[in-house]
Image (cartoon, rainbow, N blue to C red):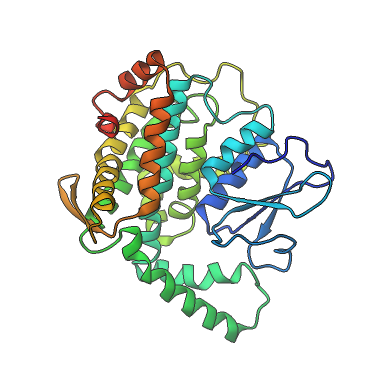
Length: 348
């Protein structure tokens, strides 16, 4: 994907096509707000969701960029590369740490949030009756709150059945449930301790990984009844943090607000990455390479079974390429930060 135009018409902001129920839409919208990038948020499926050529595969969010001199607007997908494209197109208020070693750790945690924590989000939403009822009743109505009730009931039932049918793809099933639910509770406990001493993951200003965690937690800690109740009980500070991250347009970061090293409280989060996401990525890669029908592995001392996930195979390749691109000094710095967390197994 090529970067968006650096010079955008002043009267044509970017358009973010998304939905409040999409953690990745919330992630990218919060980045745009914090970076003060002119944009319009357009609810997917609403009357304003038009004026561009849809990609063959529609994923939320979609970022629609005006093209200088007119022409068909450009449509780009995938929140992680989009954040990097925005870094190239707009100056100031960066969400990528200036130190390349810290930037790598930031990218690793961002990937963990996007690709592992989403398992918990999908699991809670489509496993427990109160969560299913709320999600099926509310999510389809965002596009057209004024749609006829009979049509909404039919749409809600179709949406519910489709999403429940995808649980196996995401990795939620009776075998994996204990691992997913225990990991969510531990994550809340880790973040609750970390945010007691600093407002963001890497110190005094937010990074891309902050927004990735925020995106998933907008659903887990703020929308779906079961995980939201757990969050309120175990981590009220995290619940408050999610609300704060929603709009940081008025927050003024300092030039030296990135911490020079990984604090012990953040190391606890990296321990979770190494405990859960790293063994999954490696087992998933083995299954993809061998053409296996299932990822059969052990994670956190418990059995894990799910269908191989090709996109997460790409995530592993991207992380390895990022690590390989670092110079020797920065790579040694990353190794030191990850020492003892289990994350270095990604590169061995």
